[in-house]
Structures are given as C-alpha cells and as structure tokens.
Image (cartoon, rainbow, N blue to C red; front, side, top):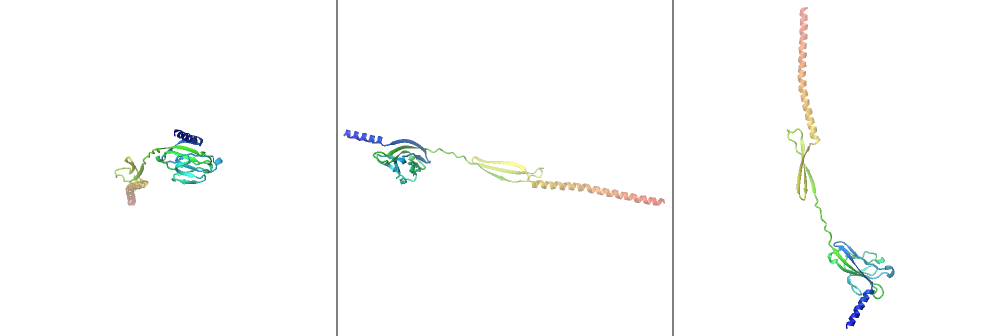
Length: 234
C-alpha cells in the first residue's frame, strides 16, 4: 500500500516537472488596474485555448475567471477581467480593472499545448497595496465690497472709504483704506474756487469804478468854475 502511494507521488512530481511551469509576483494598488503577464509562442503553436483561474489543477483552471479559444474570449466571470493584449501574438495577459483587497492572492494561467502534459502553466501571486492618501488643500475665497462716503465739511481733502472683505476657512478679515474721491468731485471743487475768485474781482472793480466817476465829476466842476471865472474878468 505504501509502495503505491509513493509511486503516485513520484508520478505526480514527475508530471509537474515535465510540464512547463513558472511563477512570479506582481504588486498593484487598490483602485487601479493591474496586469498579470502570460504569453506563449503563437508562431510555433498557433491559436491555443487559454484559461485563467484563481488556482491550477493538473488538467484545468480551478475557479475559472476568463478563457479564450485563441482568437476571442469565450467565458468571463466579470467585466473587470479583460484580455487586452494581442491574442494573435500569443499575449494572453490578464488585466484586472479597479482592483480591491479581495483581488489579492494566487492566479494561474494555463495554455493548452498538444501532447501529454505539455500545457504551459504560469503562477502569479498578486499583492494589493493601499492607495496613497491625497491631502486636499482648503481653498480661500476672496470677495471685495466698495462703499463711498463724503468727507466732513471741515476737511480740505475729501476722501473715499473703501472696505475689502476677505473670507477663508480660518475666519474673516476686514481692511479699510481711505482713497481720494473721483475726478467729478475735483471738478466741482475747481468750479467753486473759480466762482469765489470772480466774486473777489467784482468786489474790487466796483469801488474803483465809483472812484473814477467821482474824479471825473470833480474835474468837470473845476473846468466849469474856471470858465466862469474867466468870463467874469472880461
């Protein structure tokens, strides 16, 4: 009995050794796509049936997730499993879309080759790491509000009060500045100054005119008196 068991074990070991087999490790990130490589010599073997599973048995794929007849996909367990390589070139690499932690583990790719125990088997151990954390920077929103107020009558230079309000995540800050009034106020002030100058000139011209009239009247009276005096002498 022990001899039969040993013989079966040795036979199984020999079969595994004769058939082509390889293994490798692949690391992916959660939420991203990952590709598990698998290829065969298409020129030498032509289109071959290929299957992917979560493990491999002696003759098939255990827990099969996708398979192809060499030219197109024939079965698929989920749309997340894709064969995106060129099948006509022997590229039967498996792409898993939007991986999660549950996708981690061992996968097997089996390429069926004619002959006894000639199948090509590739074992791949997939490790899924956590996606890196992305720190978001708070945005600052700035709004400006402008208000105009006239200056007091005692001030010689009118001003405008401008208020800027800045709002962010930490609070509110208000800045107040005093700026000159617009050009319209300056024009009004110039007109007022010109009117005052005109009034001053008028106040000077009128007395001068009155004085000149008085001088003219006195001169005329003196001339008339001289004429009468001359006539009296004659």
